[in-house]
View 1: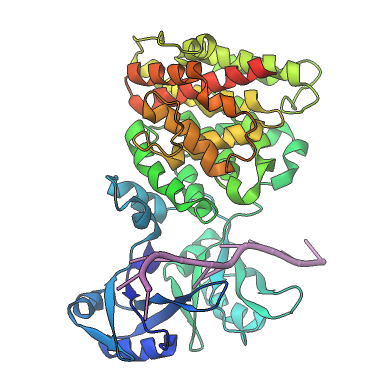
View 2: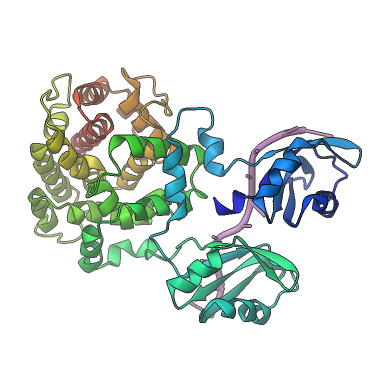
Length: 464
DNA sequence: GTTGAGCGTT
């Protein structure tokens, strides 16, 4: 992360020490861009640590070698961990994954979140400064609705992405001696959130055809704020190693739009799930979907509509089956995957499979009331726990990976709350399905996924 | 007292 470049973590700070004092102290090493002391949100009490950001990252080395005493307390300076690092630091992670993903940005909102606004800053001052970077199309400074106090952050929109990039080139900007921090705004309205139901199919198709994997990552990154940190951490390595990066991987592509909703589930709620379902279906390049898409006669583009659960189930499942046929999931799903999951998967088949089988079937299929949860869970799950981490810790898993997904996924994104069916996880057949799929699957991760989802879906069908 | 908060209005 850019903003972490010149950033040091400062631990053991006296409760007496202020941010100003810290700045004063560290300024002897060079230009200090920001100091912050974290406080307990509830009590307001300082938590005893904070951060200092130097304009020049090369200063850090010197600072790290010295001992520091502020207000009579010896404080400890360490390189600040990026948020991703925090999460993954203890376990083997692909260090490249997080970084490269973090740097890009495919979901471009042309809007920038600006934090740390001084209360005195007006929208005009705000605008005037940023106009140096391009044509400003919108300026918003947020105020508390009831108290009318400035909330210390706002947004600024540009007409071109270039302008946005220029602004984001620096993490901090000096507005007349006040420093503000800029980040790309979370594309909150990138997807018409609750409007999923009313969306025309055009949107979905568009999604389906968009092929960028990176956007998926990016959206994740941004969604990290809303997802439990661990979710993001585990996810990267998993992606990296399991072939997410592979071009054309269905997940990435289809998920782009979905992804956002899915990832952001924590913050954005289930409305987006609706996307997920269609996106999967539409986005899926394979023919089998067609069947799904066309779906039940009565419910053209609303297979996710509760109205048509049966049609839905069949349609959705039909779709899945088709998938499965193409790849693994067929077996895994249909049979419950008990041990007998295909052993001879060809790599290519798997790849293709992963795309579709993955989650989408689940999405579509699970669409009912609890559906969203599932799909999300699924998505989040992957993110949450790598195949190696048994996040969910559902006792039933005979072999952690897949089971972990399930457990982790649901747990993470949903807190289990929406997940009425506790028997699900515990169901041995399911575990078996996973296990089998995973064990046999050549490209490890994907297989597990596919199997997992597929079976999950079928399971639901049964329930209905 | 040792690794972070803030993401929208009409």
